[in-house]
Image (cartoon, rainbow, N blue to C red; front, side, top):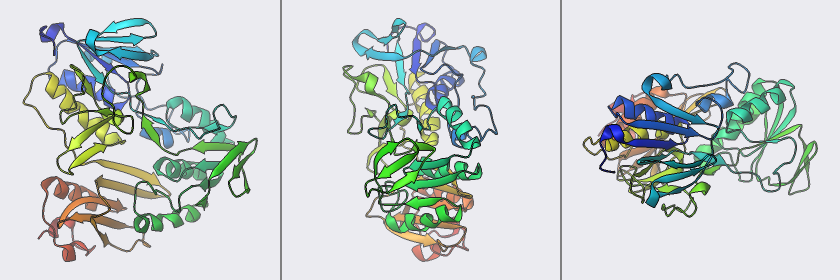
Length: 404
């Protein structure tokens, strides 16, 4: 960081989502007295994203703006301004309105949805990532169109849930052989397949989209699925294209490579949230976490490092949740294919948990309708507590009582 006094320093945060807003707020909470500027590409007041696929989409809420008094905190908002590039050697951003200097820069641009090839500009094809996306889709649900959802991942399941609640006919097409194929092993995802039919949605696996035509989606086997609207949910990638040529190191997935204090390869530049990966000592690998909790937790580490507090290593237990088809699904930790899988409860029932063990220590768990398992399991993962597998498999026994 430059040698200017703290009161003279200008911190600029690029990205006005959860990670960016929380970084700005954390700086003030931790006593930073310099200038804090938050730059957002969207014109809207900074808002939270999870309600977009739920209350906002269904017309139960008009928006999800953060309850933050930016003016009272002395946080300058520059909204509707796209950042085009950064020159770390000059400590300067390139924006639509011209160069913008910084002393310390925080990259918090999040992730952007992957588009279905061949559908760019095709009428009736939608993404669900921004407030504008949700507002475009809201009347589609209200008119109860036949809807095809491409992708049976987390966002696809959540949108299908909302569309069925709105009374739409829903078909979900998934190229893999099961839902959540990129996130969960086959034996864990298999019980979730029936959730679609139970909710009145059709799930078609091993189905690839060949093209989208007016009123229909054509699959690679030649079949046609009626579609008044198509919603694409096939994943997201870090929104880092604007960093090309900056010299800031990017990883294999296009993410910013950060260290264990979320510092990048460029001096005075940090990265936080969906756009950055970090090394996890707990799991022995670099993690790229595209979830809300990561965007909430990381800013505290960034702010503490900036104000000169005792360095805090960022190594959280990743956590996320999803509400789909009347079920509350929570996941904590990070598992690998070599980890031992252990079930608590029958997956055919309304509530069950899957645990992953490594050398009899809990490293991850997925809880369906068992929030107590999740809360206790998360603490056990953080502590690295040794578990007794036989006790752990008993769903009537609290997780915290299954230690070795």
